[in-house]
Length: 215
Picture 1: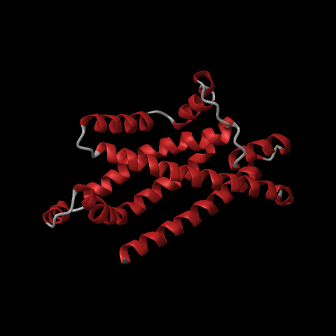
Picture 2: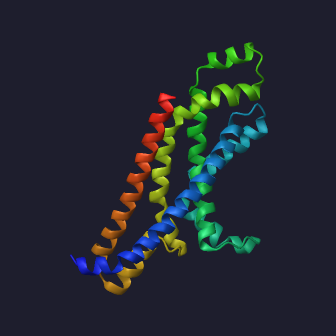
Picture 3: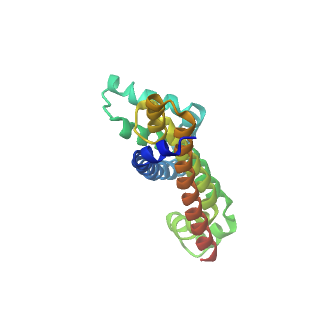
């Protein structure tokens, strides 16, 4: 194993890791927004919204994320959507993970005891007040861990954007393999940085889950 080479290219991998972190954070934010809207649609009393929510989940969970990225990045210009590789990566992965988060958020809301809702309505709270003051605070405690699983899967899934030339960890590893012919060292370095990011994220989610359960 060429330790000297790994130390030499390490700064470039750190720069790529920062791109991966930025991509993960922005994609998570977009995914949570899409997930919240999707869950609201699927739980709506209006059949049209329920159909839209169900169609969104079925479409984006039923097709490969890589195909979705290709359609957005390479097919977008044909319909007037001009995005650079990073923007396409954030939007493509964000909408994709949002479909999974939709079911996670919806599941957490459904898991809240219906008696809580009935009691709130009996006290005179509106449907909106019941949802925001009673149901969602309890659901939030239930969905932190499942959302954490989604986020960890998302971080690993950011490797897909290498296919559209976003210079993140996987793309950087592939580029240096082409010039050094040292695949083991390059992928080992890339994998180690992915593990650090995922481990740190996991610890943060575990802390948040503990705080939510104590509150």
